[in-house]
Image 1 (cartoon, rainbow, N blue to C red):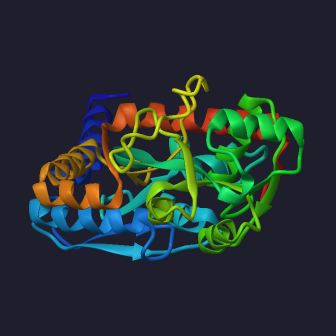
Image 2 (image 1 turned 180 degrees about the vertical axis):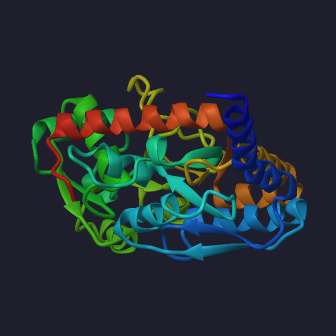
Length: 323
């Protein structure tokens, strides 16, 4: 390569890098969209809207929440993964996405491969609840009852391959029991039938069942987080019942399309952290039963990989077919 060719190559490389640098310096200069793969009113949607409003104050631009439900959040994930890597389209990744990617030969978007992680925001623990008609009051009694009647005690869930379903399968595998899975199209009908005694056991996000626990219509045996939840501080975790490292929660965090400039990622993470520091955001999180959990890009990426591995192991052990 002669001198002129060398100079041309340098100028070309500089020109190619210039837009990324300008983008990071000027970002954001217009409206941002945060895409949620679930309908309005879900825990993920509510938390996103709370954080989005606070982020807009920090970024100086409107931040709107867009709902694109379907295929257990995979439709939204694929749409964002292939959008422009300019920081203006953000995806809310959840446990559902890592489960989708954990099935053998999965075609679902893989959060750890197809996205640039920004920050994990928070978690909502599940609760292990039973119908009082089952006649058990502790985790140990439930395990004993299931061992006495293999495959007869019914496990309700919000659908095949969902987080509540796999939480139940993880519990059954670790306890050495067999439960009869009864999938529903969403959690509302599952909880209704649990209240009526048509089904007997369920793993459910804490806010969805807490009023029924408080009224005595349902009985809570344990929570599934790494620590006790503020919503029910007297309720032990499954880890405290001897289920080593058992953790299952509804978590969510922000991700961007691959190739997004690092400067843009840094600005969004800063805006997210600032939002989580606001007293009003903390208050609304407490009201929704959300535990703020801050993980930066690298930590979040590692968490995504570990979640996918965990659920892949549960799927293999329980022989669960892809939904």
